[in-house]
Image (cartoon, rainbow, N blue to C red; front, side):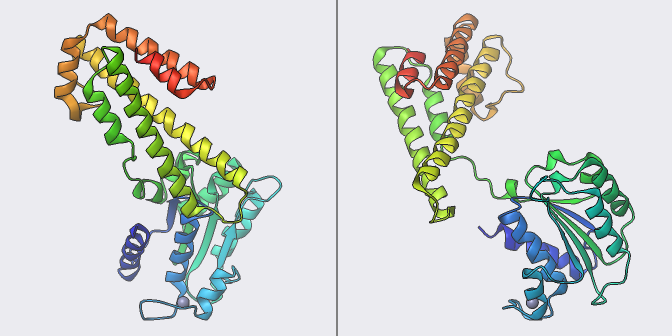
Length: 310
Ligand SMILES: [Zn+2]
């Protein structure tokens, strides 16, 4: 995963060419990758080390310690979980003053989605007419929670999108769909067994991923809870694709093969819709709806699947 380092290279090129934007919105974790990239961007502006890797010059150290006089950090207050208008005004005022070190001035908003509407308006003024050598960095995980007027004035760096691989389960599930809806008890049991094994490997993948990222001190109970929540999330994403596949077939029975979810499987959709009827596919969709209700009631997974694909 060298996404962040690629982004850094691009930013460095913009800096060298004098084309750095005045405002960036980093869409990524304000505790993890988003925050790290913000710190690296700031270091890039202030670091005095000319060779590739700085091991901690006085400027970088000050940034790490958050005591650099030309870098203002805004974070939600622990109590209200909001970034207030006052804080924004104080920070932007500093932007219009001369930099202590004579160079860049930076304001970083961590959890920028927690800006109060009035605070956002105060920020907007600066975003509209930013003084030279000023960079505003907004870090958020939920870009859509920001006012569009703010978002549109920022250059976006989407870490969430960049680091997203196609989910582990996708190919397996599509393989299952291509087999068609089970037509006999035997087909039903192989179908369900295959689905179970996809879900199991997904569970394992989530577990590995979380283990690699998690805090070793964290209580096993909490870890298990988080894992279970992630698993349920993924399971419902998987179930959603059952609907999209059947929807495509339903359209197929009407002779429609445009704007399909699974257009990459057009041939298979055509074959399956020729083998089914409109009402048969509707019946399947009803079964899937029932499946969702049963899973929500925490009924045993295997049983729920067996009944749905009978
Ligand atoms: Zn440095």
